[in-house]
Length: 462
Image: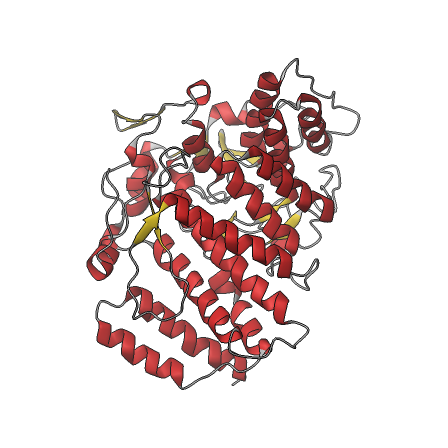
């Protein structure tokens, strides 16, 4: 068996045990196996970070289920699993069996990144690939914490972030060290620190889209700063990403975007110039982009697209009168959860609008939209002021990124802090109406019971 494959299998088995086992003895038994296989080279650690089924293909989409871009018909409710039903109707208890795939999988990713970082610190940095590999590990750790923060923490509020609960910040691969929850401010500080260093270390190009490039780290920084309401830095880092990787896909290009294909964009992002980092997730059938998906696209979202907007045919298909989502950049039956330049342009446009830079904001928005409309059928949008521009940008953000990762859920959370953009969600299931009010505690998912029992973490109030 290939040495790298053997190494990874042993370490992954250890990580799964470390994040799921209930007994310290189980951890120690797993660790003894880990100690018998010692990574010794940069290539060994690159091999760890190249296992895509762990670091790229199990991303979280729980937020999509609770958002407002799709609904589950009553007849399909019994067909989705218990966790998905709970997410959809904003129940107090979410995780069936007391475990969360989101929590477990992303802490495995974080632990895997820590294994690589701890190991790299012990070997020579003379290898030409050393910095790039270290940058990848830092990026994966930052992405892990960013994703978990959007699901298991409150929306960032500068006035309360130092006292709001964040995540347990693990910066070592030693699982014998139990770490309690940090503040939300400290969690974001760690995300920023890791992503900033990753941006400096990562290569500008990679042989595979599953490996992050430096522009992906800049995009992650822009996302984090946008959620923090730091629009100057969000503009700075979105501009940095665009300066390195400005490409947008013209949706009129039928060789890349095909309205007749089952999935409208190529699998694994091949040939898509927008993708900076490729990943996907698909735990939940109600938001997966397949014709048999239990979820139906919300009518207000679908009707918001102009007849000349190619997203209407590339993103969706109408089956039996119901609108289904097909426009995932994953190119398969899972939601794209990576980073791409379309999102980065929208981050920069929003950041500019929030700073009163109306002309710059509209230039970025129109630059995106001209690549989304039928050739010669787009009239540039005009905004009289920054607030009007902001409203347009947020509308287009929902239309451009409807089922990408947990973006709609993240946006609902952060925008609820502003009375102008607050939204009250409601769903009727078998005659019973469920409501999610702005800033409701139910926007913060509970930490799974098994993790509370093992680590003694403080639970979220719901």
